[in-house]
Image (cartoon, rainbow, N blue to C red; front, side, top):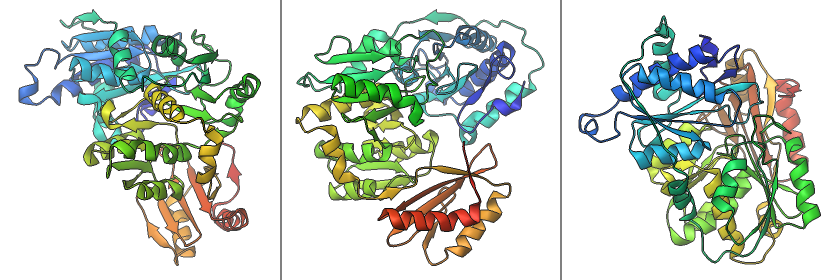
Length: 458
């Protein structure tokens, strides 16, 4: 088994060169061992406490990998509830709804069609990442010498669509306006779930790339602007109120306003802040440290408690749970909710957006404009071999600023700030700069670039 498929937050690689049925069996076996070993004494007697949920996305090899994964789980004696082809957030719902010790979604999220992998969650849908069990699962799987033995575990098939729909739509205001929305499903799981969840609402829904055969018209990654071109064009042509682009497993989305302009995920977090704090005063809202300062400003302005966190869903979810935060937003397009088991959900994000837009007829672009107070570089990558040395050089060069090392290094001045953080898997440093005006942004970006070198297209 190729150990490189184990990443910081999940398991992912090219099928079948890196991720195949043998790897899936071993990962299933190891995951069942690990998650069942984490049960506390009083959990063990609950009906489904020693069961695991398994779901999969629409990739052509996902059924084969899911079968092998389940066989590996059964070989340990674990029972499995197979919930079929689902969006990843439905896995988080299933684990809590059914009361299992965890679950695995077979998916490669936003990666191209040749990739596949596994997202593992523990009890209560707590994420299993490198620091929270994935290293242990890797160790167990790597030590397995064969994929034989059936054990006495059994498989139950369960369709949770109706229960999941009730869960998602319980957040919907029944008085939503008859909005016209364009949804690009990216040939992913949103193509299945959006019609099931939203098909009978009083909205006009225009669907793009709703076929989910495992082939993609564009890569299912909405963070790449080129992948939004069809959505933007259709929003303009159809005079729609908003456009939405989901990623492959539909846990993330990007929003486009009625003018075909992309709304940055930090600005979307800021936009939703008054909406959540209105009915939940003095609540905490969590945001990743790459976010514009406008996020913190809007949280404070509306009487909330800002909580800045390092990048990554495992960190965001833990902080939401620890602080009992009502809402959280990440630049990657993940949005998290206290009332969704502290987990992210693209579908629930769409519900809340429909609610917000139904409160008045003010166009989305007019709502966003007051939040566009700063200028940002966006995330820019630099290829750097000795990442620690270069970050020390930056710290010395900008020693007059306010420094913290929550995730990489962040240095703040009165009119600008930047964060540089290392990639977990590549020789890259990732830079984000924000300034009060575009001239200052370009000036300080060039100054930092002199130390980091030339940006790379990555």
